[in-house]
Amino acid sequence: MAQTLPDSVLERAVERYEKAIASLEAAAEDLSVEHVLDVLIARDAVQVAMSDKTQHHSGRLVKAVKELDNRLKEQARYINRVTRLAEWQAIFNPPEKEWWWLLDPITPKPWRDQFDWLWRFFSLIFLTASLSLLIDISTRFLSGEPDTAGVFAVIIPSVLTLLAGGGALTKTGQEGLEYILTSFKLEKAWWDEIVCLGSALLLVFLMGFWSLLPILSDRYYVNIGNKAYDAGQITMAEENYNRALKLNPDSTKAHYQLGKIHEELRDLNEAKTHYKIAAKGGITAAYNDLVSVSIGQKDYTEAGEWLAKCQEQAKGNQKKLCTALDKLVRAYIKEKNYAEAVRWARVGVADWWADSKMPLVGLTPEEYKLRQYNILTYLGWALLNQKNYSEAKMQLEKAQKLATEKAPAYCLLAQVLEKQNNPLRASAAWEQCLQYGSLIDPDEGYWISMARQRIAAKGEQK
Image (cartoon, rainbow, N blue to C red; front, side, top):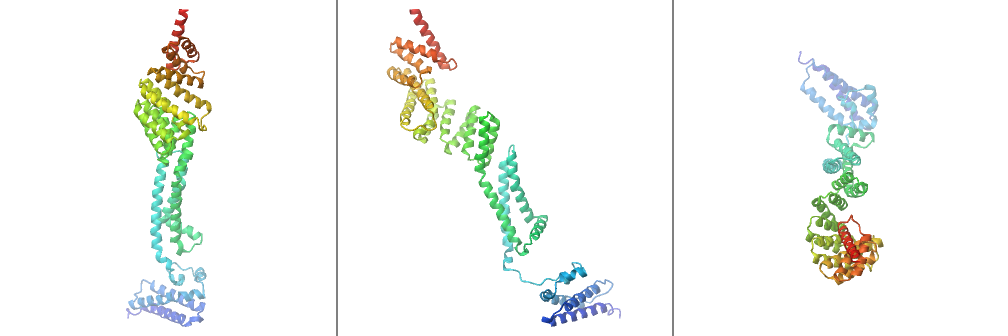
């Protein structure tokens, strides 16, 4: 007798539950709110009976409850047509475990939900790519001594990436993302697509930002470096040029400016490295600077090779960029290699003749004359040492006409006239050499000494 009594309460509750469901199913189109409430209240009674742990419940009744629950779930769509269960939840205040008060109609999943896994897969790919770009961008801006602009340039993409990555990959982030999407009243069925789209837009943003780094390099950091360089702030200039190279290793402008700084600091090997990159990048003037560096290293053969490339790259009037030709001619004279000095000086004269037929670009007439004065003077100097006095005299007289108040051409012409046994004109040239000469220049200082000796000797002869 003790084995059958415990099920009596549950059994009566199950019978009531079964009748209520049968009545609900039979009502069909005439289903009313009363039918719905009868079923739900009956299910409450079943739950109360099953919650009594002092009673023993047979497997038959438990199985019957499960079958009845399935039948109730199948009626969810009809129940929700008749009444909104949310309104009754406010009255009965059921806990979440009492699912029958929380019934939603069973609706088939949209076909697009079958591809949710694909959207999540693409989201992961986009976020991984975004993270890689963010690391690359951050490394470029923050390596070395980071500046304020660089720090701010990293903050925005970093925050966006962390928000997107955290929202997709961490539990806390997913909860926050769910809260945001719910706040905007976006259907849950679209959440995976929205997250994927957001990840794709983040990647596009970072790719766009990354592609702008070369522009930021030249238009911001190189310009700041130029201003610092012009103000004599070499250290600050070098820092900004190096930062420009971090953002864009191929920045020819930054390489060229760094070459100038290292040349000034007499770090000629480093200067040559930067000049070579700048020259290959299209800065023709870098070839000219490579000539100067090679001369500083006393590698005149290499200097000539760089000068030839400069002449080749700089067409027509643009050969004005190859001003190191003067330095190379002077260097050959100092090394007493007069043949090479004459050869390169004649190249300069030929360029002058070609350029004189074209409009000047970037040079004032005075600058243009001064350059040609130097070339003609060096040519006359080299010819003097080759004992080609007649041509030396001709070239030096041409130089005099271009700059009547510069000493070198007078000093050299005086020596040529002495060799030609023309003491009167030589004496006049020595006087002009003494008048316009400067002791600051070593060569002019030597020639001034010669002029004084010649003038003094002439005075003694009188």
